[in-house]
Image: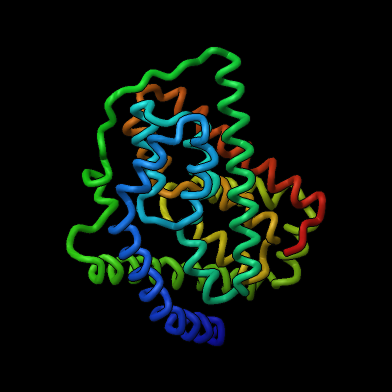
Length: 282
């Protein structure tokens, strides 16, 4: 058990400077491009799912929140919103960049983006066929109210985000490593991988956690070889960061919000099961 704690500490410390550099770059890009990104989605029209999914693949802080606010004002369609949710990577990218070859990361992102595009276009097509037109309203930008963006400079913002994620990773790593140690890595991995339905279902439920913890948990489980890549993708598809939490606060209609979350979960889990059954290897 002492070895588990020691390995977790050393792995976390090695990851810390890399996380800071990564988030520093992300904060710089976001502060320079967030307004352009939001305007691009607003003007996307019927191409919303395509543009939303492509932009969503970049782990911009609060991006899913911005998309949620736009949907609450009916500036973007439901298909575009779901596309953003499905493609958003949140904390997966900075964690995988340190541990996984870039070609594998690109494949995972590519699958998420493709699923987001296809699902978004299908949803919008079905809604148009049902004549459910969405009125355009003024949106209320709640990003600042929700404190999703830091206003005190990119260095302080990156440092704050890095320390927050480091704590998540450290605690989750201890829990996962301890569980693997006592239960046995081969036993856990065999159980989840030999039960195609269970893995994606559990990963999807974890993905519903409305903050970065969900993507951290799922990604760490993948890195510890506890879950397969298809289960990883399933959980990441469902994970939409703070977007889901903001949805219930900004979008009128509790039942509608529940249906949106159920739709997101169904798509993520179903795609995970399909990938599991076809035996996708990355």
